[in-house]
Image (cartoon, rainbow, N blue to C red):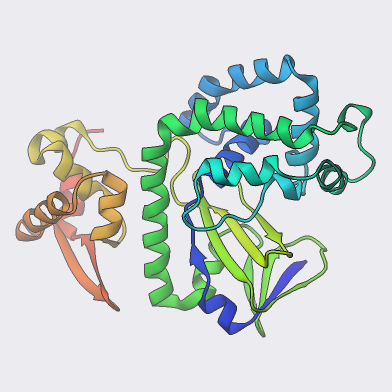
Length: 321
């Protein structure tokens, strides 16, 4: 199994980071190797995969680079640099583009598990990779970024609440398959047989993305490490409960949406991120739901969490399907 030795100071200083590049890379990987798990995801693939396949068919070198760098059990390091907080897509993409040709080829040999095909023996691989990532960002991710960012921020808020309730072990064990806290300052990052790494005095980032993809990455020279994980939202929002039309007419669509989202305890901040409504609007909806007995609240550490009451559950279940 692959595990990291993470000392207490490193873990305590770990931060959740929103990364446009990680979201774009995860989207590219989903387009390349992902499979739909529900009708809504299948619709997303049907919308975006034809143009993606057409682009790769017209550019065999790019197609080979993606298959080698992102299509196996290990990602090429130069394609997945650990994000830093506050950087833009353009700034992070410049790091990909600035990779030396020798470095890119070495990373691809590791991810591909052997010598590179003749098509990849060329000096412009970082530029080719950056061009494809830019295409995915501009064509697929950027138009949808406000919605995706809301899902990502809601996940961070939920993880913060989980951290307050169950500590880091509870948070880490729900991030990626195979990830768990082993005790003794050891974090299993995946079930594969990779040498352990010692994380002392480094910057550790936890990076949610909306596609169902996850990985770990590092830049040992810059002392940056990252865990990229699939957040609770998805590309298609297929996991989000649907607001029944009749409930929307009764309560108003926005207020009904808040009630539906209280399928588990959520903070005001999380509801703001998920709904895209302002803090004042969400607060007013919650007050009405509380006064009507459809929602309740309880304190968890410094946070106040809202949940559906039994009366709220009865009302929701009474709606026609």
